[in-house]
Length: 502
Ligand SMILES: Cc1cc2nc3c(=O)[nH]c(=O)nc-3n(C[C@H](O)[C@H](O)[C@H](O)COP(=O)(O)O)c2cc1C
Ligand SMILES: Nc1ncnc2c1ncn2[C@@H]1O[C@H](COP(=O)(O)OP(=O)(O)OP(=O)(O)O)[C@@H](O)[C@H]1O
Ligand SMILES: [Mg+2]
Image (cartoon, rainbow, N blue to C red; front, side):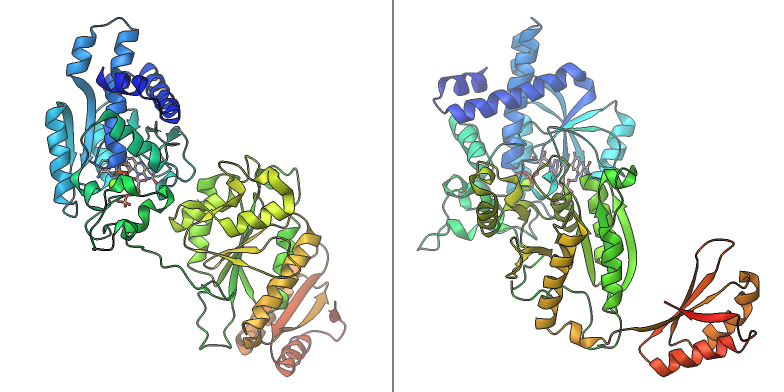
């Protein structure tokens, strides 16, 4: 088999290792699923071109391992190949896909539906259980994926098989050039990663002094392969902690809203009690911020991403804590990354901080702790913080794991907010509490009337126990109005029925 031979004969040890690992994944998949149960998602891009040849080699080796006729395996490639064709595909990509299909006699299934609907249709009509993809770490969609990853909730059920997940940009080009296989012509014109015609331009890093573009394999820093993608999210200046807040500052009197997300399986199993959320709500309340939601998410990228996605657009700020660090369960930052649809990329500034903090233990080939969501992360510095606060648009990732640590991070956060003028826009809330042992049925009606009379105040109630006292809270910015509301309520009962409490 020409691919296998080319790799075995080359002296690139790194490429050989990557190749062997990818072939291993392919062979395991072919051992787990029959040929009819697998499909290959091919779109003419460089990554899927690499995968095509790996699959050809892997299928051949799979056949020869079973002592079946390998001649047939060289000539035919019986794995169903799916291509989602759209009007916004580059014509060079389209024609390369069709030419490749004809050269290698691919069994093509063309879909003109969106990915999800196309896959639903395909899976209804065929016994497909696993799909090979050319997804690589660094792709925005790779966040949280492994070599075998079930499709996400909401997608039809199948196994995503990613044999080249750990391949770098350099590995891709080493393979294509070593095996001397054809690739789409756009890669020779400065394109380094290809999306749709609307969001892809040649990579400016390959433009020479005569305004000509060098081929994609000349890009020296593979982390910049997506520099030719027109960004959907523009990055922000890294100056103020208030950047990215959804709040409209022109209405300075309106309340800021926040959501609080704790991350931790142990909170959900009742092993530990979340005290940080409680203290954080109190602190937010003390500066007149309204907490609209508090949630606990599992240590799982999709659960975190779902929660963050839901809250970030409806709140001025989202605070998330737990699951930050190098442990296997520390996936909070990756979850935030997924919520914003951006990839995780090494952040040199953050790595430097970590190096100071924990020495050389944190450096290495893949310093996971120093990977942060790309293009949306702002490191917010404060002299009292040994590691800066991580702020992704309006999501603040707190590293606190105890109330004392939260106190420190909070003080710094407040300091920074003040210096950005944010806290000066709202006045502190004033509150008054009344306690009563009257039964709730007796209080309900008169209290409703007071609520109607004082719509400018927040009036709430809570019970200490079913049989015990009820606490009525009055909150607002105007002391006189609070006094008037409390008095109006007291007048509706006998003089000792309600008393002020802390
Ligand atoms: C075969 C196939 C399977 C996919 N499975 C999933 C999935 O399970 N979950 C998911 O969020 N996206 C899935 N996607 C979508 C991709 O992750 C991603 O949204 C898409 O490739 C982005 O392409 P775009 O940048 O052109 O929008 C799948 C795509 C393909 C082609
Ligand atoms: N339109 C499509 N049809 C079929 N598969 C697709 C399509 N778009 C993406 N895929 C699958 O998703 C994988 C990842 O896509 P991605 O765009 O990151 O890589 P690529 O297109 O192969 O290379 P490049 O990074 O140069 O664009 C592809 O390798 C392919 O398996
Ligand atoms: Mg592509």
